[in-house]
Image (cartoon, rainbow, N blue to C red):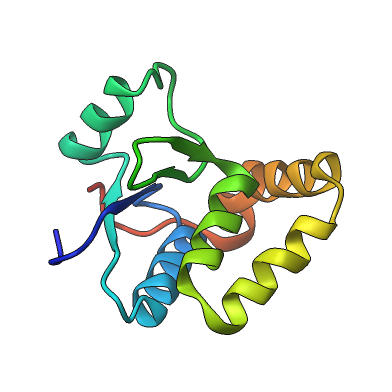
Length: 124
């Protein structure tokens, strides 16, 4: 874990879109506050299980510095807000979209991520 990292991002390690998002977050996380785990890794799977995720993971999960587990659009909003600057503004704009609409959009992208973006050739 990077020094000072207190937020854990648990993502689909075989999803191209997820990989792009993680690389983007890493690039703009100038304070080193995020650590990243794929949910295919032993550590990621164990962490999700400790937080009550029992079925196959199918979204991004964010464990906040206070121990709260966020999913889907709420996780993305939180991450952008933590990046600061223009990302914080983007998180505020996303919050202007009605929750049912942004959740439905997030879930559609999540369900179709392999078909649209493909898979990486690694398993952890």
